[in-house]
Structure formats: structure tokens, C-alpha cells
Amino acid sequence: MESRMAKDPKYDRYAGMVTLPGDPLNPRKPRPFRVDEDGNVIYLDEEAGRARPAGGANARAGILDWDELDRRAGERSAPLTATAVRGSAAKGDKGSDVVRTRKTIGGSDYYVINANTYDPALSNGVTSIPNEDMISIWNTHKNQVAVKGGKVEKGAYTIALPIDFSVKTDDPPNERNLSLLNPKPTMYYPLPVINTKTGSTDQVDTFSFGRPNEWPIGTVGLSHGHIDGTSEGMADYYDLSADPKIYGDIGSLLGNDPVPTATVSEGDVGWHQLENGRLQFVYPARELLEENEAKRAAKRAKMIQENLDRQQLLFQRKMP
Image (cartoon, rainbow, N blue to C red):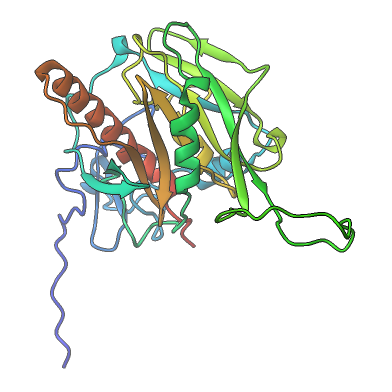
């Protein structure tokens, strides 16, 4: 006879995780909940009376209103906006610990901050990361979008141009083709965004890349500069309770054609990316010897971590 252990009626998969403050389906009104062993969301204010999983048997922790998300992410006609949190709105003093690893890309060391709320079982499995050539291009051309003394953000598209080195049948018969050392099949270059909309409040600076279906052909990434001196480094601003909703610098990773977004701040370039459905932020590894500078960097990393933990919920696969 098969024996089975009784399920704990008070089991909570995310017990103690402060990055899930309440009802993920209604961020305007936080509502305490727990997640049972089957992944059902159970609201604590209902449990005493009805003990009913919210949203039916297929409800899952942290999954937003999929009709709304599908509409927002799938609308390629909706403008995409990047954001930077301003110093006056910065917190970074609560939430889960920073999960940071170190890796080498193109001979340079980088830190990688990973979303704590990533769950492989719920992940959409999508990968959208910049290759070494894209990273190199923006390390070289970062001053095109850097904002060192201005009041508005600047941005550019990353364009991929395929190059075909094969001999064509209509090439002149006597033409001499010069040999190239390790020719690359694709060339990447920055293309500045023109006629854009920017904005600024006490909390956030914004930059619009326009409608994705109107981006230049060959766009494989976005890049923008946060305003040095007023922004909190590379930290973005995320607020789904705003109208319209503010997705931060991960908006380019939503939808059917995700592309990574680069952020230029104080001479460095970081990237918001997806790896197997897990949100990540990648930025140069620096050894900071000055105490105040190290504290400021730790605060900003904490802010980025908190945002990734919340934003990760947008990248879970749709359950049947």
C-alpha cells in the first residue's frame, strides 16, 4: 500500500521573501498571501473563511493578469520607454540580498546580478543577451548616449548589418578582392534615436525609443544614458501601479522579439538581459577602495536587485 505524507496546511513556498509584498495581481492594493505546495496562491484574509486558492486551481505565485500582460507586451505599436531612478527617490535599503556572480566577457570582468524570484518551473525559458561584439561596440561608443551635464536622457538603437563575403556571379571578372583577416559575418553599429520623447519628475527620468514596429530594420538592442549627477547610477525605475505602467529598463525584453538594453552611466555600460528566462543585470566589475563610493555602489546594486526580483514575475510562462 502506498503511503503519502500529509500536506502542511500552512506551507508557504515564499515564506520570508520580502520581495513579494502582497497580491501580484493587484499591485495598487497589496494583499498578504502564501503559496501552497501545489503552487496555488491563497490569500490570508480569505483562508480563515473559505480557504480557497485565488484564481482557481491553476493560479500561480506572482503571475500577473495574462490578458493585460499579453496585450501590453504583444502590442508592437506601443512606445517603449526606458527609465532611471532619481537620487531623491532612491531607497535600496530593504528587500532580499544581492545575488551577484562574476564572469569574464571579451577579456573583461563583469558582475551579474540575478533575479532571486526566478523559478525554473515557471520560467518562459527565453534568452536575449548581447554578444561580445555588441558589448564591445557600446564600450567604444558609450559617449554617444552618455549624459554628463545635460538634463535629458539620450538613446540609440544597436543595428546588426549582415555582411556577405562570398563571390557573386555578377562580380567583374578582373576585380581583385582583398583578403580579410578573420572577417565577421555581421557588423554592429549605433544609430541615434531622433524625434524622441523624454520626461522627468522628482522620481524618474524617462526616454522613449518609440514604437517597436517602427524601429529601424536590423535593431538587435537598445542603449540609453542615465543623467550623471541626478540619477542613481544604472538603477532603473519600476512601478506597475503607475498609469501608464512603468516597466523600467526591461521593457525591450517583453514580447515576441526581445532585445537587450544597455545603460550608460558614469563612464560604465551595463545590460539588462534574459538568460533561460531569468532576468539579469550585467555591469563592469570594479574594485572600489574609497568607502563612500563602495557604499553608494552597494546601495545601487541593492536597488537593481529589488527591481529584478519584482520584474522577474513578468517573464513567467503562461500556465494552461
